[in-house]
Every structure is written in C-alpha cells, then in structure tokens.
Length: 201
Image 1 (tube, rainbow, N blue to C red):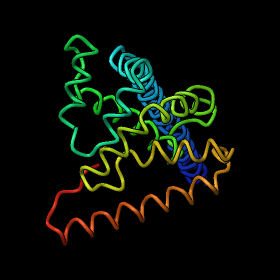
Image 2 (cartoon, rainbow, N blue to C red; image 1 turned 30 degrees about the vertical axis):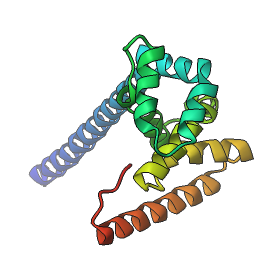
Image 3 (cartoon, rainbow, N blue to C red; image 1 turned 180 degrees about the vertical axis):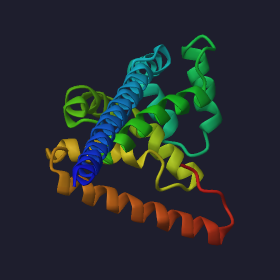
C-alpha cells in the first residue's frame, strides 16, 4: 500500500512536470514568434522609410504633371525611364521606381491579410498608402495598359479604396476585399495561361 501511494505520487509529480514544461515551452515559443513578428514589422518599417522609397515619392510629387503626361501615352514607356533618370541625375530609373512601389504593394498585402497590428496600419501605414496612391496612379494604369495586367498594385489600390470609404477597420469589409482580389488574381492567371503570355504583377 505504501508503495502504491508512492507510485501514485510519482505519477502525479511526473504529470505536473510535463505540464509545467509544456507551459514553459509554449511561452518560449510564443515569445519567439512575437520577437520574429516584431523583427518583420521593423524590417518593413525600415523599407517604408528607406531613402530610396522617400526619394521616389519625392520625385513623383515634384514632377507629377510631367510624368503624368508621359504615362497618358501607351507608347512612351521608354521616355518615362529617361525622364526619371533625368530628374534624378541618373540615380533613379523606372526599374528602381517599380521596386519601391513593390514595397508599398507588399505592405498592403500584409495589412489587408491582417498580418500587421491594426494600430500600426492605421497610425503609420495607411497615411503613407493614401498619400502615395494619388502619386502612383498614372504609372499604375500605364503599366496595366502596357503589360495587359489588371492586378498590378491591386492591393495598394484596395487599401486606398477601403481608407476612402472608412472601412479599413471593418474586418468583414477587408476580408471581402481580399476575397475579391483573390478572384481577380485567379482570373488573371487563367486568362494569361490560355494566352501564353506571362502574368505581370
């Protein structure tokens, strides 16, 4: 009987140790995920505040009228590249501009899929997106026309639409918009796969 009691106590103690170890491991895992999430957010913030992106936004703002006129003509894409090189002293070409716009698109993807805290998106990302969209509108539609792409910078556009309607914090509206974008992307892939042309994102 004495040994049975000791055995029972040992079993209870063993279970207690396993539970404590599991709780500790889960806490460590949670803290590790939180640290990685924070690193990702900081990395994104650094990209959004990078000298390159700020320079691109400044160029688009300062020379908006000229570059908008160029974008209105489908056949002047080469001229657009030459224009950016000229006004930036050969520091920024069309490829660099599109790289910077890709950062805004990537940030929009994260925000729309609720992978960023709403507080961060509203206080920091959303104003940047809204301020940038009007600047990138001409080059967005010029690229869509030239490449035959309906989905180029679509997440950036969706963020602006939600912000304009005051629906960004409406999670149902955000998920419906994400679903709509997903359908558009699938349709674009299907259309391109039958045409034999690559999908331009």
